[in-house]
Length: 310
Image (cartoon, rainbow, N blue to C red):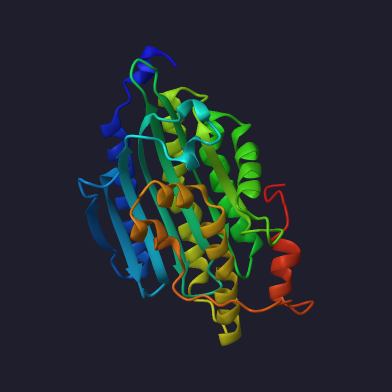
């Protein structure tokens, strides 16, 4: 790292993540017709993790059954094992983590669930250069897939990343497919999107700009899909299938998700970390969709590795 990179502008990071939270909640509220409720919080002074945040939630909306958009800025004196086990040179360093994350669970099973986050992590030690990286991305989890929606979602991600290198979209798309994968089910969580982590290869300013481009593109990636689908008719059986498939979301977040594990292991705010959980979920024993049904098409077609922009 260069000396210049030690002068990381924490205020600029904070202002961007908070501003993105405001823009996304405003856009989603305008479409839903119900406002998010903001809950500002601060960690107690005697807690091992210091910091504050703002958790915005929308429950029982006209479109969203549950939505959560969270900002947090936390600091700790020592890296938790979940963050340093793959980088032992960082063990014992103090750290700061700032970011914004969201999950939207719609009422209508014809509208996909989505997740997005952008974040920055900084680890420091006396007389040593700081270690920093950015991470984030967004992905789509349909219950009743539509090719048009999948292509739009991926095209928006590609358009955001291309100015920073034509190789980034295919690389981050593959990373997303591999990261949001339920190993115990041998299936992806959804149709993917883009994902990156431990990213610092463009230098701080350009890596931050790339992360902003991803965050800024989310509204254009997701809201047009919501607008097209939220008034579609659906049956009670389709609603039940949505609730069954939501179980995959719970399994993934609690077993594999790096951010969830880091937050819980480092003493993060549990209510904010688990705001991503869907409000109603079903688990069915040994469910197999009937051949030729839309439910079977989800498994046979949409939950398969696919180049949506081919």
